[in-house]
Image (tube, rainbow, N blue to C red; front, side, top):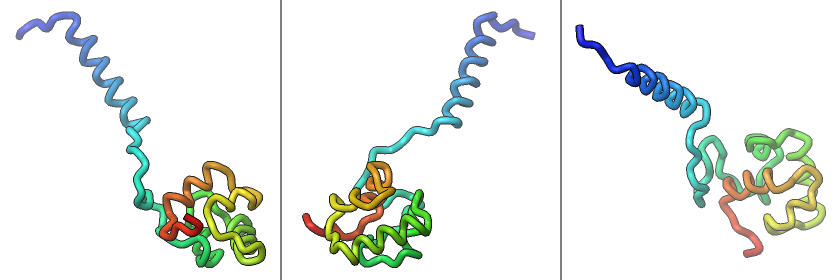
Length: 105
């Protein structure tokens, strides 16, 4: 049987660790203008609260608050939505990736 160099086992072990880490932290793709995977495409200004609940991070109360703010205050653009309690930069990014209508632009 052929003898392998001692460094060979170290290299095999390191490659295994790198492969395992790659599974834990998959590479993220750059944001695109299309809805992200798993995010339904919708118009947040005409969507019902039940449809808004389909977005990641949007529960029934936030969806209802957002729906009421849009219709009672007359919000017309995504830039106005942070005025709704509970919508910050992260949720605004989710809305931007799902938005099919760019009102106010």
